[in-house]
Amino acid sequence: MSKSIQSEVQKRRTFAIISHPDAGKTTLTEKLLLYGGAIREAGSVKSRKSQRHAVSDWMEIEKQRGISVTSSVLQFNYKSHCINILDTPGHQDFSEDTYRTLMAADSAVMVVDSSKGVEDQTKKLFKVCKMRGIPIFTFINKLDREGRDPYELLEDIENNLGIRSYPMNWPIGSGKHFKGVYNRRSNQVELFDDGNHGQSKSTTLTGDLSDEKFSTLLGLGLHEKLQEDLELLDHAGDPYDHAKILSGELTPVFFGSALTNFGVEPFLNAFINMTPPPSPRSSNLGPVDPNSENFTGFIFKIQANMNPTHRDRIAFLRICSGKFEKGMQVTHVQENKKIRLAQPQQFMAQDRVVVEEAYPGDIIGIHDPGIFKIGDTLCADNSGTAYHDIPIFAPEHFAKVYTKNALKRKQFIKGITQLSEEGSIQVFRRPNIGVEELIIGVVGVLQFEVLEYRLKNEYGVDVIIETLPYRYVRWVKSDLNQNDKISMTMDTMLVEDASENPVLIFQNEWSIRQIEERNKFMKLEEISIRS
Ligand code: G4P
Image (cartoon, rainbow, N blue to C red):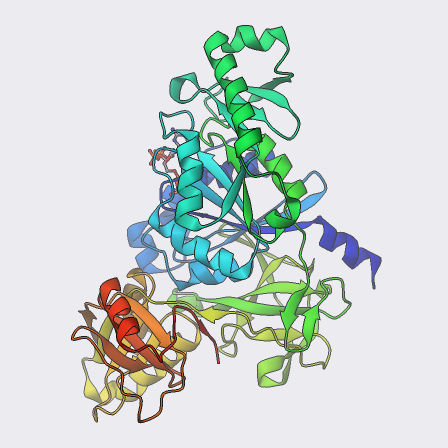
C-alpha cells in the first residue's frame, strides 16, 4: 500500500451541497471558497452565474437562459485538506444528473432556508443521500432574517425527512438581532461582526458564556434565553453520536447566515473534521479500498458539448481507488477494452485545466468519443472490478416524441438511443400496441429542450414533443406472469423501460396507492438498478 496514496486519501473531502432553489446554496458555496482561500472577495461566483452566457461556449439553451445545464466541480485546499465540492444544479436545470452527482459524493451538506424549512427539492435529494447512507450535514441559513423558531425547524427536519438532528450550535437572537451562535461542542459563544456585509471574512469574538462580557454584549434577555435553551437541548435533545452521523442516521445542524458570513467558518472547520475521507466502495468483487494501488473509478455523468465546432463529450469519472496519472492505460471494464486517458481535465467552475495526477475522491473529466455509458468502470489492472451502484432515478415529466419527417426515422432512433445511454433521457415503450411509440421520461423539463436541440443539431432530426400528464413512475419488481393481470386505474399506463422491465406511470400519488391496494402481489420501486 503506497504511503502517498494513503495520505492523499486522508486529505480528501468530497461532498455535494443540496437545497431547494434560493435557500442559499450558491452563496454558501461561495463563502466556503472565500474561507478556503480560493477566492479573495465574495461576489465572483455570483457574477459568473449572471455573466455565464457571455463567456460560455456551452449550449444555446444555456446562453438564452443564463443557467448552467452542467454540474461542475470545485476543488480547493483548506487546512491541509483537499476539498471537492460537487455542484448539484437546482433551478430549471434540475435533472437526473443532479441525483447522479450524489452517487459520486462522500457526504452532503443540506442548506435549509430558516424561514421556509424543508422544501420539495431538498426532500427529493435527501432521499438519495439517505438511500446511500452517507453523512448529511445541515446548514440552516438566513438567520439574519426573521425566520421560523429553531425548535420548529428541527422538528420539521425530523418529521419531513425522518432523520434525527443534533444542533452543533444554537442561534443567539435572530433577524436584526442575530448576534451569533453558541458552539455546543466547544462550549463557547461565537459572536460575529459583519464589518463588510459578508464580502470578506468576518471577525468573531469567542469566549465563555459565564464571562460577564457576554451578558453585557448580549443583554440580559438574550443571555437568559440562551441558558434556558441550552439546558433544554441537553435534557430533551438527542445526544451527539459520531457513528450515527457517519451512517446518516443523525444530522449535525449548524445555524448561520451565508450572506453575512455568520457561522460559515465554524461550520467549515467542524465539517472537515467530521466528514469522512473516501471510504471503501462496493463492487462486484467486494469492497474496494481507496488506498489500493489499483486505480479504479466510475462514470456518473456524461456531458455533451453543444458547440457544433467542437462536438466532443466529456465523461465525468469519480476516482475510487489508486492514483491516476495522465496518459495512463486503463481497462474499460464493461467493454473489456484498453484505453489511454490522454487529456483528462479537472474543473474549476467553467474553467478546465489538464490534470497530471488525481486521487480517490477527485473527479476528472475524460474525453468521450462515444464509448462510455453512465455507470461504466475504468480500472488499471485486469481484475474486472465493476461498480454497479448508479441507479435509474424516477422521471417526473413524460412526453411522446415523434420525428416530423418519417424518412429520418433511422437517425431519430440512433439519436434517442445514444441520448438515453448518455443518461440525458429515459425511453419507455408501450408493449404490444403494434406501432412503435416512444415515451420519453425526464426528471427536469429542461431536458426536453435539450433533447429537441440535440436531435436537430447532432442528428438533423426535427421532432414533435407532446407532453403527457404523467408525473410519477414505479418499477414493477415482482415477476409478472400471464396470470397476474394488473388491476389498473384509468389514468395509469403500463410501459417498458429500455431494458424491457415493466414500469407503471401515474398521474398522481392517489393512483399509486390505489394500484398498490388493488395488486397486493406487486412490489413497486421508485428507483431502479441499472441492468
Ligand atoms: P441557491 O443557489 O440555493 O438558489 O441560492 P442563492 O445562493 O442564489 O441565494 C438565493 C437568494 O438568497 C439570494 O438573493 C441570496 O443573496 C440570498 N441569500 C443567501 N444566503 C442568505 C443569507 O444568509 N441571508 C439573507 N438574508 N439572504 C441570503 P437574491 O436577491 O435572489 O439574489 P442576489 O441579488 O442577492 O444575488
